[in-house]
Image 1 (cartoon, rainbow over the protein chains, first blue to last red):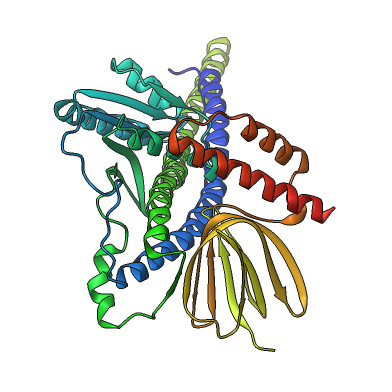
Image 2: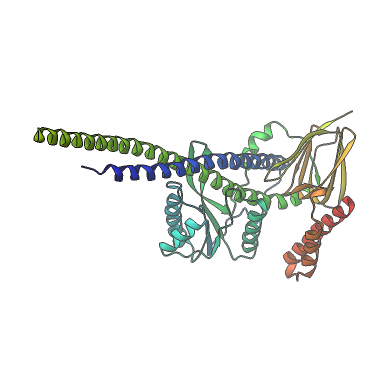
Length: 294
Length: 132
C-alpha cells in the first residue's frame, strides 16, 4: 500500500511545478505579444523598402551591385545560427541545431573555409557538444533584438564581403509564418540573389509607374538600398526568431501545465484511495480488537 | 490647409504617421522642403533635422540617413533611426564625434565610413545644441 504522506508530498511538489510552468506560459504569452508588435512594425518598413525598390525597377535600371552577384568560387562561407538563450521551449533549439549541423555539412562540402557564428546560449552549447566551435557568439539577443545591434553585425558581414573575406552567408533561423506555424528555415543572405520585389517588376511595368525624380540618381539610391535591404532581411531573421521562441515556449509550457494537471489528478486519486484504505484498515483492526475482548 | 500624409518608419517602429502641411527633410546634400502637390520623388537622406508642421505647430526630429519617397501627396520616410530632438543625448553624441575623429581611415571605404560617422555625430550635436 502506498504511503499517503509520500503521495501528498509528491502532489504538493507537482502543484508547485505547475505554478511555475503556468507562470512561464503567461510570461511567454505577454512577451510574444510584444515581440509580435515589433515584428509587424518591421514589416511596415520592409514593405516600404520593397515598394521603393519596385519603383526603382520601373525606371528600367539594370540592377548590378556586388552584393547581388554570386561569386564564381565560394571559398569562405559563414553560417549564422539563431537560437535562444534559454531552454524550456520544446524542440525549438534542438531543431535549429539539427538544421544548423546539416547546413554546416553542406557548406563544408562547397567551401574550403567555413566559419560558424551562433546567437543564443543554447545553440552555442549545442554546437560545442557536437564538436563545432563557433567563431563568434552572441548572447545579448533576448526577446527584443534592437536594430543597432543587428546593424553592427550586418555591417561587419558587408565589410567582409566587400573585402572578399566572405563569399557566402547562410542563416539558420525559425521563420514565423503565423502564430500557429513556425518552421526552421535556411536562407542564403549573401549574395542577396535578387532584391525583394524585383520579381514583381514585370507586373508593375504594365501600370506605367509614376515618373519619379531621383535625388541624386537612381544608381546612387540603389547603391544605398541594397545594403539596407540586406540589413533589414537580417533584422527580420532576428525578429522572427525572437517571436518564434516565445511561441515555442508558450506551447511547451502549456503542455507542461496540462501534464501537471493530469498528474495532480491521478495523484489525488491515489492519495484519497490510500487514505481511505488506511482508515478502513484501522477500523477493521478496532472492530477485530473489540470482538476479541468481548 | 492643404495637407498630405507623412509616415516615418524605422526598422523597429513607425515613429510618425500623420497628416502634415509641410515637411523639411535633410537630403544627402542639403535640405528639401515638401508641400502638398510635390512632384513624385525618391531621394537619399543625410543626417540631420526633419521638421514636420502639423496644424501650424512644428516638430523637430533627428533622422539618421535612409530614403524618402514622395508620390500622390504621400511622403514616406525610411530611416535607420528617428527620434525627437529632445531625446538626443548631448554627451554621448560628443563622445561619438571625438571617437570618430580619432579613427584612422584605411582605403576609400574607410574614409567614407569615417566621414559618415563624423557627419552623423556633428548633425546630432548640432540638433542637441539647438534644442537646449
